[in-house]
Length: 606
Image 1 (tube, rainbow, N blue to C red):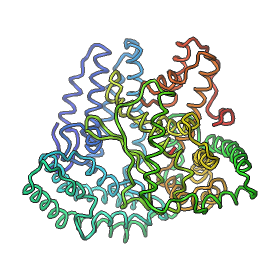
Image 2 (cartoon, helix red, strand yellow; image 1 turned 135 degrees about the horizontal axis):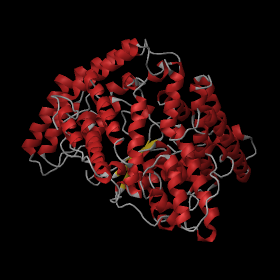
Image 3 (cartoon, helix red, strand yellow; image 1 turned 135 degrees about the vertical axis):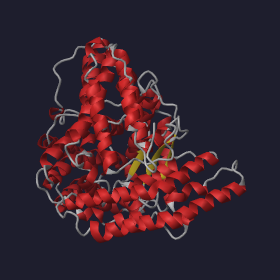
Image 4 (cartoon, rainbow, N blue to C red; image 1 turned 90 degrees about the vertical axis):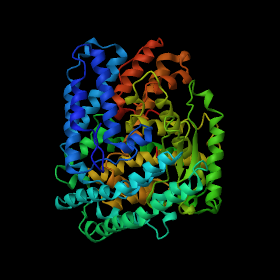
């Protein structure tokens, strides 16, 4: 596949050649060829993704964010969708029908999204090149001189990516399409944090401080010198100019309105995002009502825990106590990380009781990098890759220790590591009987729904024995319930940012810094945070149905293995698949309960 000089895209002629090479006969053969092409297209059109997956041949490239590159990808996606319509689903085996359904649904959803100018919002305080570039560079292999040549090549081509990104932002400004102005306050600092005066302190050159001893010292010196030369002559001026553009032009002229629906065609755009993220047909209004029901339910359970502790004050006094009492906070970042690792080790030993199959890929616990920690969430998970030789990582935020209480740590570890994101994502990657296109697919409703569902497994894992930790688990469940209310409230129902923060503060003991970061996250990622609780409720509902249908024959290990065994799935597809599994185990399925009606039925991340 050919590439442009500085950026990457699957060459149109090569794409057409591969598309035309798809067999004309045989539904199975057509599907296999189309899946193969779709996988190569993703890896080569988005080489950063290729790097994370250990895909060869893309290590020197960045995604082409020029108008030509964007339009070419859109056109190619439409051609893939058209080709998928020529597959006769009736002539596919059952497992192939699932492959086809997912391929067609994903392409159709992507093409439907092209009616909205999402590409004109390439940067916000939560995502964008200032966050993705150092992550990609630090994920790249660092084993031999050739690996470092690849890193140098990417560094050389980085100014063009910065320029392309700025052009998109300028076009967004002209159309009055930007993130809310209030959320951009940390953006210039995030950019400048990449270009400190000392090159060795830059996240962009971190790899050159980690060179293996197998590379001769003299060669290490030459490679490091080349990197620092690129840094000083090219990267510093490019990033500095970008920071000045953001500071002097972008932020002063950014939208002061916070509701995403205030954008042109914003109501339909937000509804699309909600459907895309949750993989359901729930409307924003329905989700808002579910959130209110969940907040009421969880609040009742939290009040019961307060009584159990013997605390004499009310909910507000108790949450103030949790936010401020020194017993709940560590004095050093190392102490905080050590406790996360201790919790993770305790969890690992209990997992065989709940899962018949566990992943082989290991994971670690690391601090969120300093250049992004202030405006980053409490934690996140970065998938590993056996092909790339990289473990999964649970990144914990160690910024401002007074906003990192101990009572949230057990639930957070369950969600981000095991049996949450690492277990689910690593297992999906290791499913050799499903196409590689599906092994790395992320459906937010499933992936984050599983993470939040996993938090409820903490009781089975021997966690939450301390009432404060149990309250912490409820706090995290409340956090995701509040999201349903706040996200839809701000974007659909006219809530202000201050009203959202106040509602969050009134129903959660999370520190104010975390709450402000969270609310600003919902403003720049509209709809994304809805998927957690919606997905959790659906998984809870499916489990309750299985327990009722199978009675004494219900086996939690078999249930979890079946739920995770096909990789991540849209929630509508998951439900049908698990209903079939329940029937295969001898159970009878009654009428399906909608997600919106299940909120109050189950005791029911980040």
